[in-house]
Image (tube, rainbow, N blue to C red):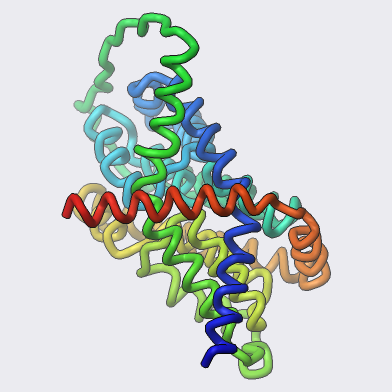
Amino acid sequence: MIEIAYKFVLNFWSFLNKMAVYIIIGLLIAGILKYFLPDDFIRKHLGNPNSTSVIKSVLFGIPLPICSCSVIPIGVSLKKSGASSASVLSFLIATPVTGIDSILVTYGVFGGIFTAFRVISSVFISLFAGILGNALIKENVDVKEKRRVRKRAKKKDIKTAIKEILSYSFNELLSPLAKPLLYGIILGAIISLIPIDISAYIDNLFLQYILVLLVSVPIYVCSISSIPIALSLLSIGFSPGSALIFLTAGPATNIVTITTIYKIFGKRALAIYLSSIILGSFLFAFLFDYFVGEIGVKTTIEAAHHLHISEIFAVILLILIIYHIIIQYNIK
């Protein structure tokens, strides 16, 4: 029992060390983006039901560090403000799957090839959903794009700007991420303790894909907290493509998002949303396993072990996570 607890602590600390510096850098970049982009900037570019609005929604959504639950009210707001259903669907897929913070963490843990596949697959799936949406979803022609006129914000001094960026990055943004991130690391550390090789029992790649999809589609997991879980799946014998599916379908879907899309956008939009994610994640999982496979993943994982990420960042991140969790429980 003591040995298992010791291995769990080692796994937990290993995951935290690999991710901490990239999470902190990603949060800072997200704070800078938030500071310089007006709140209604996105709404002004997603109104027309054409390929341009779909492409814009994907380009806007990819760098934004917003989880699958947080993106729901934004998507609904975009729709009410006049954005097309197709562009909103693309935004709902691209935004939670990636984000500047999760892209950096993915690169630090898995390396450049895996990260490229994750970003490219997200772009492809989002664009595919948007194209299908434009072709199959009929828009109400009477709906006009609503755009709010916003005065240019007054310039602020550097100290005020830095204070607002740090506050957004490590308070407003990290607060809702604290618990799912901690749970993700804990779950990843637990899965890594399993002393079996799943490939010895499930040697069919597509069965692995289906199994991962059955788990990842209904549950809620943010793009960052999905990373240690995906890494632990590799450690027990799942294929790299299976891990890629989890990193795509996990953040992009959950029961709340599915029911919201059904109620707000209808059955057809939900069918487009789910089929795009499932088919797209299957395709890129197979491409990764076929063309890159375990050799590429071993190389990237070994590279992650030699990054020598400062433990100071891990301690800082852990303190921030614990702080926000304590604050949330005190409020409740």
